[in-house]
Length: 182
Picture 1 (tube, rainbow, N blue to C red):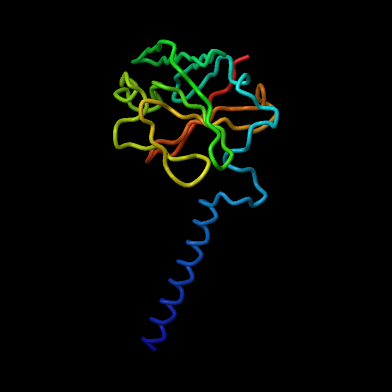
Picture 2 (spheres, one colour):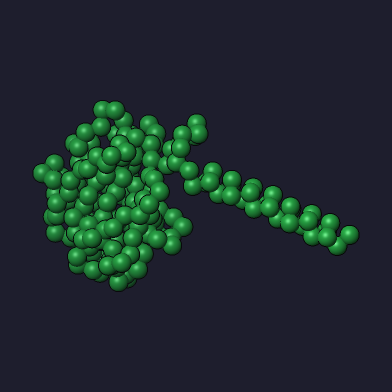
């Protein structure tokens, strides 16, 4: 009787483990399952000129602005209760990665969505050894002296049909977007 009870418990644990693994694979999979992808492509008529303007990111009661100009320069303005920061004009460029995602590289941009010590780093990016989670596919990204935003096309209810998606910092449970201010 004892052996049978142990066998039932072992089988039950195996079934629960298998179900858990299947659930986790569904949560982490980026395969097309008929649902909205994590990083929908920008509109087919997207061009770099669509990035020109003032972009607003809001989180934790703060406001962060990116002013992007057509001469491939941008300015970052951040304001909260303890820290106010405005960068000089810095360089930006676009990269089309091998999987078709559009990445906006912002040289010298500071990550101000977390610790003030990171935001106060004049070199920008993340501290050495830290990485951000790629929001569009499995893996991580290094932000050495820059921040990378993903240009996504979530819906027609946003100006120019695009948002700029920030990657999550490792260990964080959230990310945020910049929306064009019109």
